Length: 499
Image 1 (cartoon, rainbow, N blue to C red):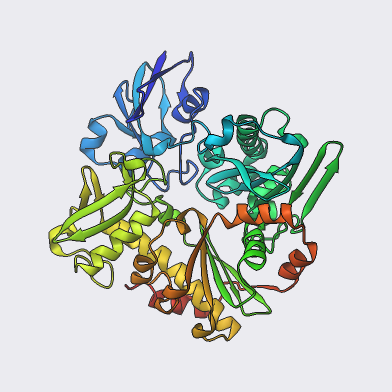
Image 2 (image 1 turned 180 degrees about the horizontal axis):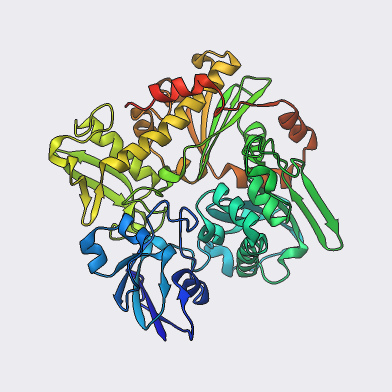
């Protein structure tokens, strides 16, 4: 049988062809043509957000399809991609948002074409749950000579670390490791060449990502009390190689956070600060001048577009900023492209604007006019009541985590001198909209500073100043604050569910 796949909205338009003699899943088809199909829940059928359309040859409707899709959508050939098994000739349209920029590395600087003195360079790598970033550094000056990023191809196993830990335990650890190594090899070859592994490299990443690339067992992080195989920094020095992995603090406060703290302490301040990394998870650190109070808020991936009906990753065409005046939306999109959905910063803007305009109440409920249909943002893009509730759950988790750290440290909020916000979302989020929906305390607005990819910057800083004493100081003076088992957190969380 012949299986044809097209990506809606991709330019130039291309049709992929797979031939199979036996039944094959849609996910396997995407693997065969080299496209990483984005499944936020890892293919468990929980998020119900990976629908694709069969132009012809649609498979039989299953229970998951009926649960996720309306009757008219099923009749028009829509099926859940993660649950499709193909048994006959077909043609499939895949929304751009489910493939994104995964097909090839992005972001290579124009300097790529310039001559590169390979005798004085080192490489910094940030292995994020969603994105992998790599930078080539001049070790004499610290200047970034080249950089590139790509979506972590592990996303086909799920949007968050827990779905990937489950995949590893289910026997897919080799595949997970190969995903990251393949991404790194492709990025490295593209911006340096085949000999990039002969240079000094510093890696930062969350505890799960580090374990997977080092092929450490992750079973201990699958359930409470979440015990990693190791939290130590890992250094490998062999002929032609000097590779270092940043240490972690706990199962959910990893080397990416240690790296970010290292960057802040070396380049920003020694004063009291709140550090928030808004990625696929939200890691929080409050430094009172002596101790680092750390936690991870289980906010879920809603603020990165997952679990939101109109949500997409931060890719071309994603609405990243928005305002509402007299019920009409004005917005900007990444790359100035036709809007395909809302990324995290756009989602926060929408909720803030809906509340500011009285279109939702303090509990996030839409006024009667939009309660059934949702609020229209653009052609085919609607913010539903369920979407808004997902955002409120995420923001309540983060804000409650911040409050718990303040309570634990016994600090007064006015004593916090800086609010550093990092991560993919942290680099683009509106601080006013964030404070407006209660994500951050309003008293910290004037102390806000975006620090972008602090994990990567920390790895770069460590290349230039390999201060093991400071890393030890960060680890030794860190106190992990467990949120889930604390009854006080539950009370604060409920309070923070309102706008």
